[in-house]
Length: 371
Image 1 (cartoon, rainbow, N blue to C red):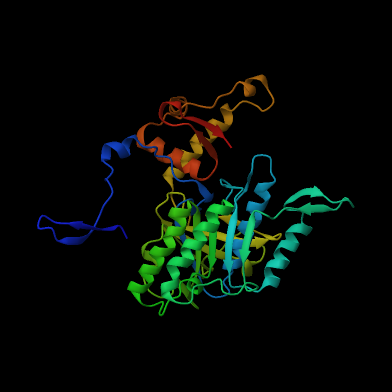
Image 2: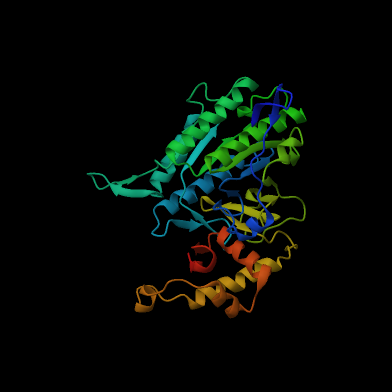
């Protein structure tokens, strides 16, 4: 806490809270409005926190491992991107730090499967067998002892150590599964205690400049995160995973038992309020069309229009025009799609956050490229 001891006019020393210089609205208008980097589009952003809750055995860890598989695929694609759950989104290659309560055999089996499926194949050994590189993933699980704070007083030092690891290993996303095991709470129902602990955890994202994804439990019936409301108070993204209810169907899912519904809300426009997921061919598939209800998203329509224009006007690779291409200026795209002002800005931020479009430069020098 920024406290300092100062002497008042009477020469008496007082302790007071000190603030940094505030940012003016003029300065904010001049700063770069590009959204933070999306580690998992619609799920987790650099410098921000996400909370994913679900009933015990609802499939949270399975879903996270599916996302990790996609990050692994991105590491060894030419453009360091891979398809994400929804068809309009790409996930970037990233470095992961994972704190897990699971037994080692579950993780050993997972990475063994990735090896067998040649997900991260980088080289071949002397027998010409594929060798995978998983060094972008760092794991603490039950094979490690003493990795969680025991008392509330230990929490600050635990967070400091995590931040050191994040910086030393250049980590892009930290996953804590489940969050309650690493908070050293006396009671998860104490609002003030939970709020202080969650604010401490937030430092991992802000000071470590990484995405922080925390997993938590709901009650057995699903619904909101279990415990104090402060679990939801400070996070930037609130996600809930549950089984489908009566009337919620996904026609594409071959096995209804694998269907899950991911509900979301938060600070970012790309968060889908309700996403249908189903497991097939060793991976999750997704749709925003669950049952007979399809959420209206005019901003998504604007983003689709811009993306289609960029696709149609991007030069064909390996041509002379492509070699000389320096990207699209903002005015070019605005004129091409007949869209202006904040409406255009919001749609373009959506595309950048979904990793569908790359933004280079600032202000007048800004150029946009198809990923």
